[in-house]
Length: 304
Image 1 (spheres, rainbow, N blue to C red):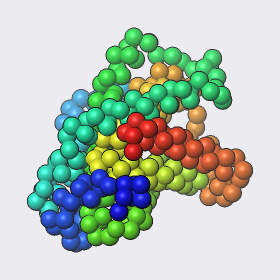
Image 2 (cartoon, rainbow, N blue to C red):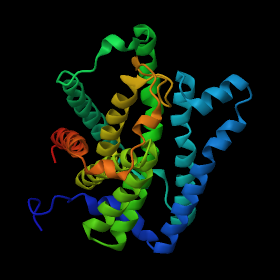
Image 3 (cartoon, one colour):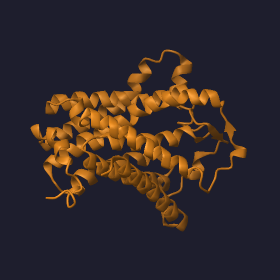
Image 4 (spheres, one colour):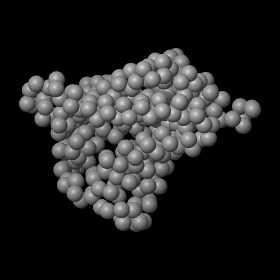
């Protein structure tokens, strides 16, 4: 098959390490084990927080310390995943990622490209009314950026290891159908984001957006033959999501430059009937367009 007719000539080499032990029962055990470790990761972290202030900061995660530590906690799940894959499949960390040099090169290229696109979008309307927002000290915020990026790399790296690394590889060994190796991990990834919403409608929008993001990252992974582009896109997206704007007092607001006045989350707790409104359809379309633009920027960056 020619390169022009096959958009994923590097995919086979990427998922080939999974062929050593492709049985579905192994995959189920790893997924269940990962979810258990991930569910316990907050409790594990909490054990090491001896001061009441540190414990409260971690629980509320509205301070810089609490926000960053919550994201860093994902690393426990990532470490657990690597151990489970080694135990059940006899393969290691880099087998989930792809060639080191290409991964690093693609991660940087895509991260910068997507960040440039997202930065350009901030210049376009509609604009936030920053007159009502509280601005953090700029120098302190700048110093937080490299720390935040490092912590987010742990968070997005764990998610990409699981969904575009482990699951995509294992399912590609079981079936060449794209809805299997691309669709199933993306739907699972999206469904976990349902809980980011304040109510059923917002949760459904989060889930749909994350599913689209998952499909974009799965496609990029298959095109590049490594996790670099997916991690780069995911990292840039999450960095812009938490570093620029947040609502004061809301979880994850600890590193944002601009803090808007507190709002009661209950005002966003609409039921599923709210999905059938033109405003919601427009919001979903805009989020889908945002994912498409990031995906396109990533493809240009890796030239595939």
